[in-house]
Length: 76
Image 1 (cartoon, rainbow, N blue to C red):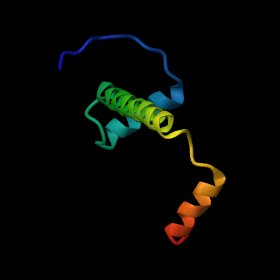
Image 2 (image 1 turned 30 degrees about the vertical axis):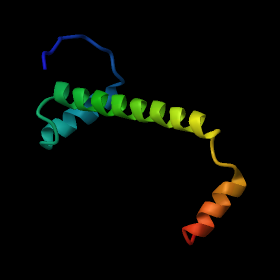
Image 3 (image 1 turned 180 degrees about the horizontal axis):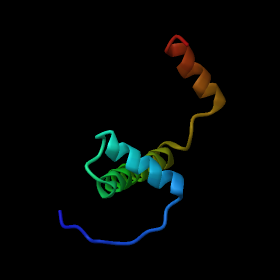
C-alpha cells in the first residue's frame, strides 16, 4: 500500500493516547496507530451500511414484541 503524508489537527488527549500506545509497543508509530484507527472506522462504517441495507430489506428493526420473542427463544 502506498502512503501519503498529510497534516491533521487532533485533540491533544488523542495525540497523547497514540504516543502512549507507541511507547507501550502497541503501535509502531503514531502514523501506524492513526492508520489502524481509520481502518477500524472504515470497517464499522461499512458494517453500519450493511446493517442498514439488511434492515431495509427485512422491513426495518425488530418490534418490541419481536425482541421479547427472541429473548424468550434465547432463554433470556
